[in-house]
Amino acid sequence: MTGGAAAQTLASLPSSDVGAKVRGDAKPIAAWTTFCQDYAAECAIDRSEPTRITLTPAIWNTITAVNKRINKSVEPMTDMDHLHVADRWDLAEDGIGDCEDFQLLKRHLLAEAGLPRRAMRMTVVIDEKGEGHAVLTLITDRGDIVLDNKTNAILPWHRTGYVFIKRESQDAMAWVSLGGATSPVTTANR
Image 1 (cartoon, helix red, strand yellow):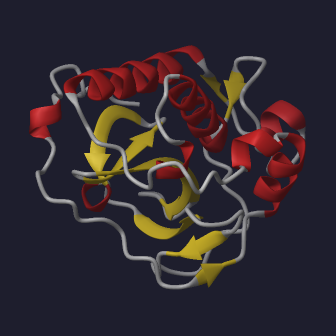
Image 2 (image 1 turned 30 degrees about the vertical axis):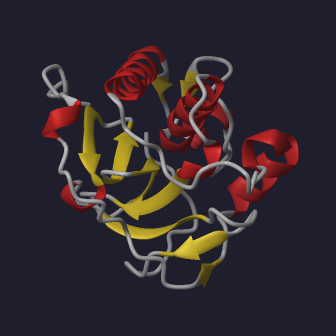
């Protein structure tokens, strides 16, 4: 995890509203399906919520603070090392988690702070090592931005270096394809 986000500001984000293109339906990650059974409120779609976050300085400060706090406070560990299972999604209740647990906890806290859950989508990517990885995509009026446990920097999706595979739908408890490549079966990165 790098700490290059210390001086990052809202003004440093691009002003365009370019977002990842949805290319159809996708099969959900199996561990997400189980997570949604266990944490139904975390997966529910409220169609009255906005589909985009309007980035104001106050909202930006909330996003960056939550991202840094969770990246610092959760101990990274794969589900296999921690729980002896290939992939399990949860809110890192014990302070230990892998990539998706970081992102789910960030989304939970950002939703508690008033951001629309519908505009914060769990996303599966292929990372720099060619492995499955989960990030949190915030769909904003400044484009799609990504929160990642590997860095405190919040980047536009197209500047992460990742191949975007799929993310949660904004319209149903389902997933949509982002057309990047074949989906990994698990998101097992720390």
